[in-house]
Length: 188
Image (cartoon, rainbow, N blue to C red; front, side, top):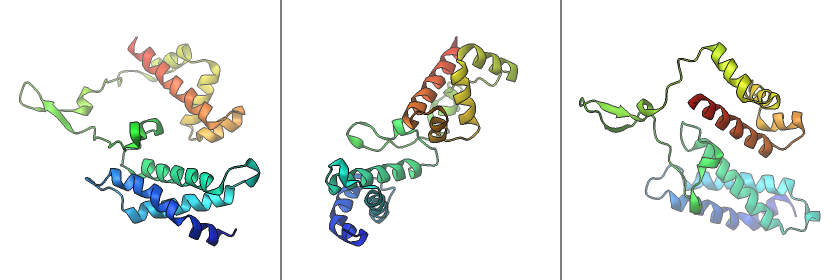
């Protein structure tokens, strides 16, 4: 089967997957249906190029997965100016979270002023670089320090995983664990 034949045969699948996400945003549309369909076709093309018949899957099953992944990636990357981590992109039943501005007024202060979300966030501006280094040294293992350093030096999770011979998912979990460890240590 050629790429053109695959696109013609599976264009209904692309529309069906895109429609699922378009319907969820009907009341407050952020994305045009045509944009979602175009991204879906990109997913179909990627699926066509990476499909391996020897794995025993039907092409449409694999294509549906790559179409869905591409649309989710597009929604995650373009849903707001604030980049939301993947684990927070979707709620139950696959409804899309809407990011809230940290400058949104959440209630009035006692003195009549406004309190924004950023006003309620904990402040850790008073840590000196030496204190930060000490916190990292006493909280993280050598491997965790190396992973954090590589990530802070703009290496992708995939690139870090390659250096440690592990998957991107494992690095993502490790970074989440590092973040939680540091947050916990800062509270103590």
